[in-house]
Length: 237
Image (tube, rainbow, N blue to C red):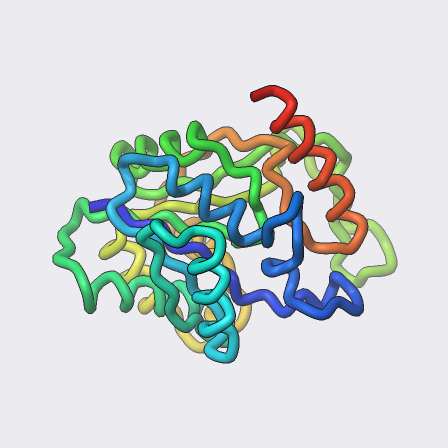
C-alpha cells in the first residue's frame, strides 16, 4: 500500500504577523493546504492521504476540508513537536490503521509546497520501489558558501555536486521506522531531515527531479510569487 502524509505543523513565524499559520493562508481563493492536498488527490496510486497538524488546529483543519474538499477521503491527525516526532506520528498513524509489510510506501510532503506535480509524486513512488528511499531535488543554481562560525567563509563547495532539497521525501515505511528509531538522543538533536538520517546511516537515497516552481512558502514575499505561479498554471489549462 502507498500512503501520503502532509506535514502542516509550521507556526509560520518567518512569515511575520499573520492571523493564521502559513499553511492556512489564502492562495488564489483557497488555503495553501488545500492546493497541496488537491495535488495528491490526483494520484490513483495513493491508498490513503492524511494531514498532520498541531493538536490545537485539528478542528480548524477538518472544517477547511469539509468546506473545500467535502467528498475527499482525507484524514487529520496530530503531529509532533519536531519534524522527527511528526514523522513518527505519521508512521504510527499508518501502522495503527492499516496492514503493512516491507513494501509499504510512505510519501511525506510539506503542506506549504502547493505546486507539487503528479509527475513528482509518481517519480517518488517509482524511486522507492526501486531503491527504498528518495528525495525530490533541484540542482543548486547559486554558489553555496559554507561558514562554520557565521562570520568567515570556511569552504565553497563545487556547485555541480550540490542540490536543493524539496519534498516529497519518500520511503519504505518499515525501514524508515527502524532507521529513525535507531537515532541516539544526540543524533535526534541535529538530524532533523529523514534523508540526512539515511545518509548518516549509509543508506542510499535516490534523487528525484523536482522543479523551481515546487517552492516552499516561507516568507511574506513568497505569497505574491506563489500567486503568479498559480495564475500561470491556470492559464495553461
